[in-house]
Every structure is written in structure tokens, then in C-alpha cells.
Image (tube, rainbow over all chains, first blue to last red):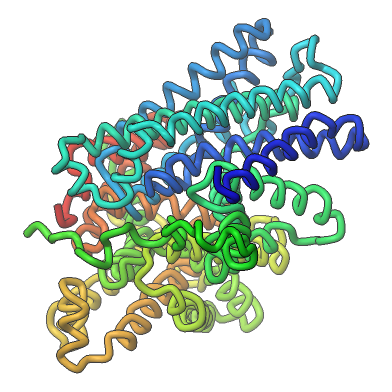
Length: 338
Length: 286
């Protein structure tokens, strides 16, 4: 095993031990913030599945996230259904909306994809603010955590387990042949098609997978917050997820989680001292895009290969941020069809 | 629906389409040439409206406001293009994401400066009240908005198809490398087009401030409508912006009248249909 892989395993092991030990080491408030960061980490990972691996940046994922949350909230506060029904409706609502959105977006790519998803997310928001069944501007209150997990530390372990399970599933997905076809989608749709793949169908699948994990995050968020509001679906929530993924390191699975921790901690801990948090979020966005597109994990890996003697020889070839143009965009521009 | 209410909704739809055209034309011009989807366009609209409102209220003159709004937004557009976007020229996704950051800053700063209450631009006396067009009375200001949009639309079409600058822009849309190889400074053209787009958004802000109200959230709302316009009409096409504005404006007006609870679906349905049938929009390049 290479030095780099050993270091990665060690970091992962350390992270796991720290995650399990967290409720013993920190105050309830901090544990609750970590729970939130884990939920957003899952949300950002689901965005990265599309943005980082398939090159499809979505700016409407909050729509999917909020649909899952609203499904739970609607059953809990309007119908008074049990947890099982809440979960069923939350997941089903998220997946149905995702499949409509995926069908709409599967034939477009690049910036067009971004625009279409943005409009989709906003329509969920518009619907949520207008629908009296969904509490309009006031949202839905009265979502209760399942009684077995009502204590903050129990809910933390539940969240940790679900996020780990989903991460493992995503790890399997991105390392499968399907994961390779996602990279092909990012590199060049034309070439992928030439190899016998159907790009539109691949896009549909990855959209559905991202929607599945995004919905899980939304459902968890509804239980975390015990309250669902249109602000969950707002453009800023979609943008925040993309920023988390980029800031932490797009195109990796751990990066979005790191980004989620950074953003959630800034928002909930530092923002006590900062009056204008959305402005700060916007500025972070601008600076990350201009100067730090490889994100935290990218910078860490650059530093590792540069400063650790034994690792230099193992340097991987991929050094550009996956956010930048695809592999062949420079070498062979897409042929324009006239 | 009687003939009169039908006509009333028709005019409502047309005047909203006129407002949307101001936004969508700039949006589509910027995209056509520079391949930048400017998601700060809604922010340009809102800040333009607020600046115009402030000037118009302070001086008591609507027209000074109408001058100040595009000038302020043109300056902001110049800064955005020259200082920020130029650093990452040609990288489509980072460029769009940068404008997302700008949109967040704009939304929050305008909340800080102008507060959260809905504001309206004071319109000049002779545009107030209704105009009797024989069988019904309809607000004069809305006719004024339609007139402005027609004027600007004709000017844009003439500039685009008859002038030398227009020819350069059209050539740039097809092949920017070739244009710069011909000795034309394409960067200057980029800056110019971006400023014109921003300027139009600023004008729309002030005009829209008399039609709708200026309020936090109006920026994302108008951005959504503009996105629907360009998705339906076809991104990068000026005629597409006209067609898209008309479809979205009319669908919105009649949607609000016929299905008030589902008003957003009148926006969503045509967009979904177009994306399935013609993914690049009605008049976009397929």
C-alpha cells in the first residue's frame, strides 16, 4: 500500500473515531451543530455526485431537498401520520419531483443545465410560498423526531449512521463502471455517445441518484429542525450546497463534507459576530471561484505531494479542479453542428 | 371570461412581457457573445430599481431616476466584467458561479441599504391614472412600459443588424477567435455588450419599480421569469427573447386570472414542454 493510501486510511480512521467520540467530548450545542453539518454534508455530496463527477452543476438541488422535508412536514403536521408514513411520503415526494426534473434536464448540459435546474428549484420555492396547504410563508411546524431518537445525542448517532451508509453507497457508485461513465459525461458527451452510451440516460440516472441522497438529506433536515419553511427551497440554499462542494473539494466525496462543516460552522458559530451573513456567503463564493477552485481537499493533497518526501513519486496526474473544462475541451473543441 | 376582461389580461400580459424583454434581451445578448449566464441579472434589476427610486424621490424627477438607474448599473457591470469575470474568461461554469456570488452580495446589501419594506417608484403625473381607449380604461403607465420596450427592441434590432458594431457582435457570436484574428479587440466588445446588458437591467429595475414593487426577493423572482423567457425563446437569440417574453408574460397574466392557485405552473408547464420538444428553445441554435 502506498504512503498516500495509508495516510488516507489513517485520516479516515481518525475521523470515524472522532465522529463516534464527539457526543462525549462536546457540549450539546456543538453536537447539534455537527449533526447539522453532517446533514448538509450529505446534501453537498449529492450535489457533488452531479457537479464533481458528471460535470453537471445544479443550482436547484434545494428544490429536491425541500420536497423531501416538506413531505415529512406535511404528513406530520397536517395529517398526523406516524413516522413510517412520514418517511414514505417524504422519500416518494422527493423522488417523484426529482424524476420530473430529471426528465426535463436530461437533454441539456453545461450552463443550460445550470439554468434549467435553477428555474426548477425556484419553482418549488414559489409553490411552497404560495400553497396554503404547505403553510405558505410560515412553513410547517410540529414535525417530531421519532421517539427512539428524540435525545440530541441519539439523533446525532442516527444521522451519523445514515450519512455513513449513504457515503458508502456513493463511494461504490463513483467507483463502479457507471461512475466511469459519469466521468465520460463530464469529459465529452460526444465521445461517450460514440462508445455506445446514452448520455441523456446517464444524466437521468445520476440526477435520480443525486435526488435520492438529496431527499434523504432533506428528510433528515426536517427531523433535525422540526420545522420546514420555504427558505429550505430558496436559491441561496442551492447555492450554499454548491459552495460547500467547491470549497471542500469538488470531485471528491470527503470534500463536500469538509465544505459543509466549514460553512455550517461559519453560519452558526461565527455569524453571531457577523451581521451580514449572506454577504459573507456571497464573498466566500466569489473568492472561492476566483482563487481556490480546488477547495480544501485539493489544497491539502497538493501540499501533501509537495512537502511529504515519500509522496512526491506517487503524485497522481489529475491536478486541475474538476470544475474547470473537461479533459478534451482544450485539445479538441466540440464540433459545431450547423 | 368576457371580452373586456380578456383584453384587460391581454394588456397585462403584454406590459409584463415588455418588462421581461428588457431583462431577457440583455441576458441573451451577454450569453450569445460571451457564453456567460449572468445570474446577477436579477440583482442588477433590483439595485437599478432602488438607485433610480432613491434619485427620483430625492430630486422629485422620475426622468433623472431613469437616467441614474442604468448609469449606476452600467458602472457595476463594468466592474463585474473587468475586475471579476475577466480573471476566469472562457471557463463557463466558474463564470456562472461567480455571478451567483455577486447575486448573493447584491441581494443582502440592498436589504441592508434599502430595508425590507416594499417600495414603489413614484411615476410622473401625466403617466398616472387610466387611459380611455374607447371601450375600457387601462393604466397609462402600462402603455408607457409597452412603448418603451418596443422602442428599445427596435433600436436593438437595428443596432444588431445594421451597424458595424452589430456586425462585429454577430461575428463574435459565431467565432470569437476569427473576430480577434481580424484585428478587432474582442475584449472591448465583450465589455461593451456586458455593459449594455447591465444597463438594460437597470432600466428594467426602475420601470419595473413603477409596475411591481421593489422588495427583497424581487431579484430572484424576476430572474426566474427571465430564465423561463430565455429557456423558452432560446438562449442567445434576440428574436427568441421577444417570443419568450410574450409567451411568459401572457401565460403569467392569464394564469393568474384563470388558475390563481397554480400561477407558477403556467410558467413551469411551457418550460417543461419546450425542454422536452426543443431543448435549445424555440429560436435557439439546435
